[in-house]
Length: 518
Image (tube, rainbow, N blue to C red; front, side, top):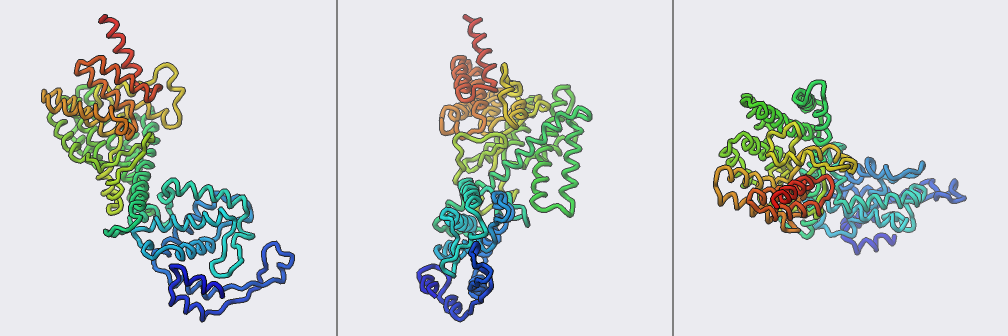
């Protein structure tokens, strides 16, 4: 067979496997060529024994790749094959794996590079789809797409797989069969560096972020329903939702990835519950209930910043400035350059992942470890507003004129709340806190830090809520007595986002003050 000669020049199979394959026989089976006028009387050769030998020669990584391909085929690829008699089979996936092994160096096939190996297999399938033919790995002149996958379905599937690869394989996160998405994140990583590790780290980083983005989107979906429950009130609604999620979490039938999700949502809602309770007490002038610290304690490890910043903000609003400064110092220490910002309601203009964060995800893959390097945007619902600085209340009423009509999707909900990136809010809170404590050098340090973020296009582009950060910087300018600087900052905010921006209120307010002064 010409196949044995051709295989001499590839990376796989090994010479020992090829030598053993020469001793294998083939079957002759009554299976005609699809569409042939003589299909009923035609026979074909099938090298089943050689294929079995090749499969037995594989190590664990190619087998893991094949398992993932089969699950992708079952859960994702099938969505794009609409013709009744068309299907992508396991044999197609196995053939793509064989060709990929043949042309890929053995150093690539390691657990630390599993995702890269999966992508290489998908690129082989793309090659088949692009040329409209899937060659048999052993028998020459056989098209495995013939009679299995029409050209229309091939093209649809080609576009879908291209999209998955361009999207950095976020689709892997959604593979819930056997909890595969979570298990791909928890593969053991080797300490040594190999060519292509940056690609692997980048994919791991984006998978980790995408997982928490989806969680945050779910929190965004849950909050409006709880806040709009007029029958029992927001506090009771939060309690009922938390109790339900906790009961689901401990259920024996709950999968691990579901437990992780329930735990995260419970912590997020506990943060809202603590803040809603505190807000009500501040509004009414009542002391905080004894169990409030337990509520805050159960929510502080959602990430490195957002829940702690809400706690610091509550202390600030209660006039407990030293306590606020202490919490802010803790957040400042944790919020280093390796921490990755994450938002569940917006995408960034310049959407880059921190290289340090990506490298961290390669070796630290559990929920607990990942949250140590994530900073979510800080959110205050209207029911929490007395725990937010007064200036942020404008963000909860940002609509001017017909702005509400220009909101889409989840914007209809979160734009009635205050949403701000963690780093600029940290600096803004530090400015207010140290201003109250009369520690001028720390106050100016926070002001210059915030100003540096909003005046650097690169840093500003890394924010999810650019207009809010600019508004906070503008308020600091006002407090510094620089009205013209504040007006320029609000104008810059409106240049970034003209509608549904509280800067419209601030600009009108300042212009009115300046006109009255003149």
